[in-house]
Image (cartoon, rainbow, N blue to C red; front, side, top):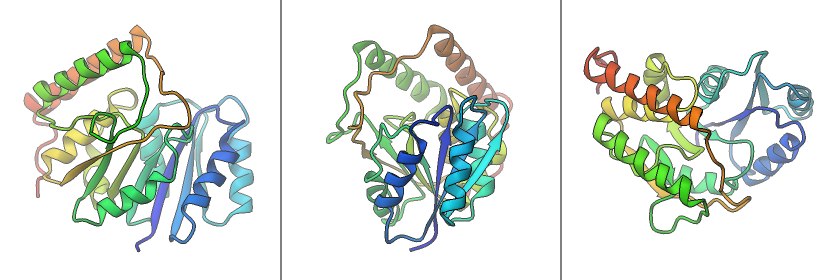
Length: 241
């Protein structure tokens, strides 16, 4: 199999990062892989833990910068540091157990360019609040109507890509935080790449995280900005295959 680069953004994960990386390494045993930890401006000892892991294991790398910039910025920085032909986005909090990475890689080998997880497909196992569920339904409908992006879930923290997909798409991505996944998948879809969804299992913790109203408003504004760039500015045009 091709070299697999696992990008793991981390913000103030100093207490759990070492364990998360070691568990992920155990699940990837037998594969040709590297792990790129991205320290997204943590204020705790995340960077120190990451550097210790880099010194201990030759296939672990670190991308680090002093200011918290958000998931999208972190993943772009991690991608620049990576060399794999297959890129995995994987949250370092382990709410998604890493044993599922192999299932995503297997799905990618079935002729797809991108494989993303979904909380809404039959077979998914996840527990989250009614408030979060209602917001997700509303936001999925908004994305489908505004951006013509026909996927059931854009926000799951495990995604797998062929490298060329991100090489072509990342140069157009402007959103750094809450609507990053939506912008990335919108661009990838416009460029004609094959996106496949599979059910996700979230087992490590009860998935009951909530967003603040300020974050929801910011996500809505960013989504409208993506619509504006896509349909009025035609900013994303020109790379379809």
